[in-house]
Image (cartoon, rainbow, N blue to C red; front, side, top):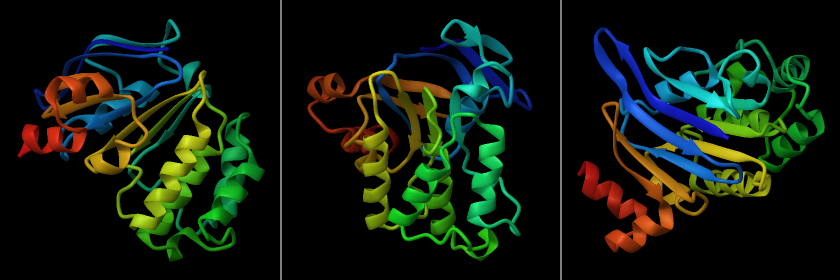
Amino acid sequence: MLICDNVTKRYGGKPAVNHLSLTIEPGHTVALLGPNGSGKSTLMKMITGLTRPDEGTITFEGIPVGKETKRRIAYMPTEAFFYGYMTAEDAGRYYEDFFDDFSVNAYKTMMGEMNLDMNQRLSKMSSGMVAKQKIALTLARDADFVMLDEPLNGIDIIARDQIIDHIRRHMADTKSFLLSSHLVDELERVIDYAVFMKEGDVLLQGNAMQLRQERGMNLTDMYRYIYG
């Protein structure tokens, strides 16, 4: 489905992503793991076509990422991407105008399950509420490839469980997820492939179950060992 081949992106001469190669097949959930500054967000922005690699190629089902692939890739960045005066309902109408695969009903259902008010201004929401609203908005698209950048940041334990449950419900044999985080223990429940990054380099990647068997530890302990 998605192939990153020897991808490099530099800022000020320093690589944010350094000669990264990664293949994601349909039906898989992949985690980009690592501390802040590892290159996770930069990689996601290149996959969406928001920025271009300096070297290497990224293709989605054989097509170079860009205008054509944006219709099939749903992306939730870490940054706030709506005006503060907008309500959650305004944000839903905005997405409905832009994306043919967006379901207003699915969005409202998820907002209700997370006890969020559709009529509340985004500027009046807490950071945790905004994080949940962004996830509901993104998962309401019926996209083939879904990317969530730090989806669990600033969210309490109960809400994290709700979000993991929503991700599980949206999994399908034809749909793939790419999730970035440094909160490994929560993501470990849903991912089947892990990529450990540091300062743009991939330190370790592989099938999650095989990595556990080979190293005799879970992904959370691997994270502590690699970055500790």
